Length: 336
Image 1 (cartoon, helix red, strand yellow):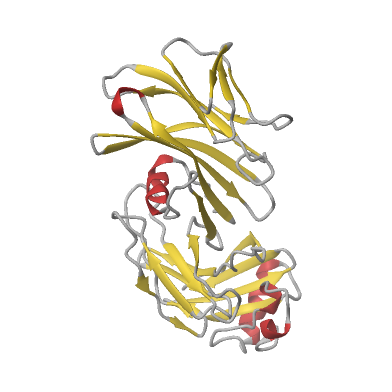
Image 2: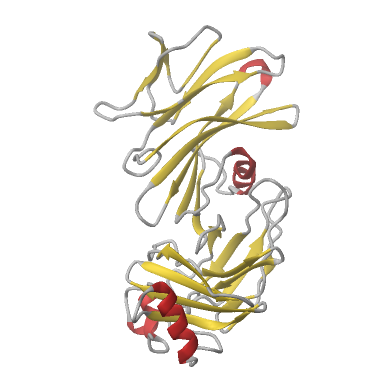
């Protein structure tokens, strides 16, 4: 067990500094059952207590976290990669996920939390109570799409003390949510996250970081407007999944088109700063156009040998090859 307040004496604000919480941390028999189920003789205890009619133990060993649950039957063990300490703020751990809402164990330095479902025109934030590090139930909006919840946490004693945002995608902990607007655009990404909730298939294991980069915004054929997103999901093991999504709006109605993706690449990260995407898009009239767009540093786009200057190209003829050029020596990732 980490000593109470261990995080105050460390510069590494990771799970190793989390003191154990919960009313059953002194129940040696319960902790032993959890460790036996995990096949461990020792481990760091993070939580032991009762949560919504179940007994829950959270323990850590190296780069893994185990959640052991007893709920009227044999104990159930789940093992996850341990979330890493991140500059954007430490993630809470999910104690129990139920239809009525999820409860989280927050880092010991977090003092405030609010939540909002991914629904409506703007986030309807509400304060979430925290007692002994455990939150009140946090519901998500129902339906077939991912509806969060979106979490906003604040640790006033940790500089700079500003709130940070996380998105519950499943798994043991929510993902750090990052939104990168186009040049000069608003930093409010709520509408983008809400649209992505229905536009993509989300990995069952969750993610450590979810980054939505709106790399292009502009006019599409027949009076429509477009916003092209590169969604990058990174997990705790260093793996990644990238998806392109084109949102098009005409007369107040918005639709989403998935436009390719890749895995295990640097695409849409700080290590590869440019991207171009292309797809067949159906216009309001029913005609189909092949549209391609890139981030602002893309100098030209080539469709089957026909080059268009700048980061946008459109055609109605068949397209077999799409390529792009950026600054000299810089590779441009292509999603199609």
